[in-house]
Amino acid sequence: MIQRKDMAKGTRKGALLRLNRLFLLAFVLVSCDATVYHHFQPVDNEGWCATDTLTYVYEPSSESSAGSDAEVVAQVRYGAKYRYRNLALRIETMRACDSVLLSVDTLCCRMYDERGRRLGATAGAMYQNSSNAVVIPASLTDTLLLKLSHIMAGDTIKELFDVGLRLSAASK
Image 1 (cartoon, rainbow, N blue to C red):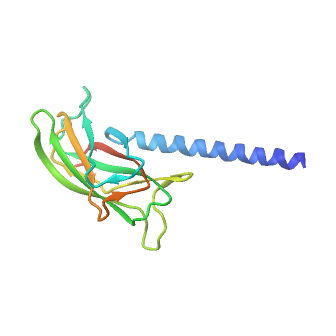
Image 2 (cartoon, rainbow, N blue to C red; image 1 turned 45 degrees about the vertical axis):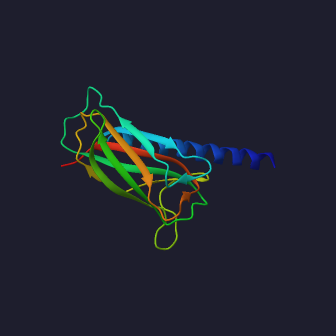
């Protein structure tokens, strides 16, 4: 009986070690891209109302590349009871210094495939998924104001925990 418990502990330790290695590999792969901004904001526990807007401010660093366009991707952390197949988002991009509207785009996160299987990564009861990438006509040397809201049919979307934006130099 004691040997089984010890074996189970060893199996759990091995699984944790493999999981840690997997996270390290994922971190290394993600850190190799051209990401200049990556930030999550929490969604209200009662749900994300259609009138709620999440605001993100990108401020360039001294190492920012002077490209002509930027690429933006939304990332969503959600629960197992999320009931929609997709999540449609509207993103407005403005130059912060003069509030000039640069673009209005739609991002779509596919949450389930055609067979009803959940897409994205999981950590227990929380899942994470990314949207399609959209190129916005903005220089990464400018301070940008990005406003994100959902454009779903339902007024309030439940089971969303955090919504993030990842901004990177657009590939040519």
